Length: 383
Image (tube, rainbow, N blue to C red; front, side, top):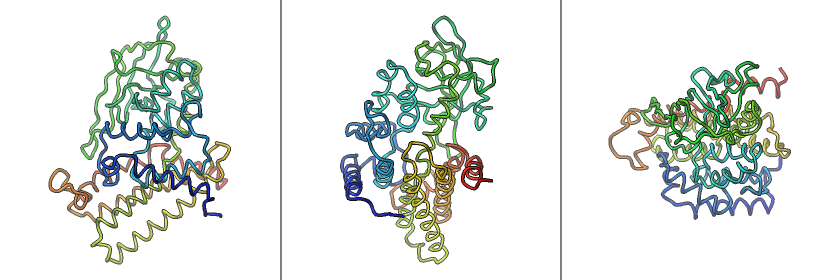
């Protein structure tokens, strides 16, 4: 395997590194590098900084702000962003609904939504999961019934990440209850300020407010906000989820977290057992990085390589393993969640418990690890 970058790709990486470390505000990057929560304003500012340079949505069609990059260049862009502590462009906008509208939307929808989506002038929420339709998404029960030219929507969505910030929500709804469940689903774009839309917070185990319930009570949605074909929502959902799974193994961010832990807990690095755990994680991350490069090298046709499931599976396992090491090294200090010094030197210990708890989700979202094992067994191992 040739691991040395070509001169052109090496120059591209240098250019990305220079931009990310000099043009994105240091305060925002420090927030990411120190493991603190970004505010909505910081997320918006970071994405607008990238978008002004044409770096927010490089995988979109060129006419809507994309770049005609190779898969390797996209990989380098993503890795250098994580290395520098730059917030990844909001996934709901950049990786989910943006590509969907670009592919399935009408020209009017593209012109109305894509520029604002790339620049985060619209903050999108994802209305997919329901209380009885998580892994079995096709069992969703939120309904949309025709009333003249409009749709009237009733139902509930859950686990709506950052929905408290949402301006619009792309929503899967049941438009035909009489056919096979996958065949009766459509996608609607819903303004979250519409009467009848209610966002209710869900408090997480770490006390944070990251996810929400969204309730729809007789919400009237104009007919021109249907995306794609009527009852074609399942095809759109599979397209979107394929994009969601791109980059779900954040090698750069996990390497950065481990390197930061080595600095923060330097006094404990003399323990041979700790050194052994660190060395094992660093070796596993290197292997994962090489796998990511292999996936990139075999994805030139745009179709996901089967090994991408390995990235999702192993990447989330390593995310969780690094957070577990941080929790172990922090010890009792990890329990002092709301008191004391929050400096980079001391705050890491208290943030270790919320981070550990929050990352339990990593092996569930984007296709659970159990599903990824099934994909690996069928497509790679031929079992």
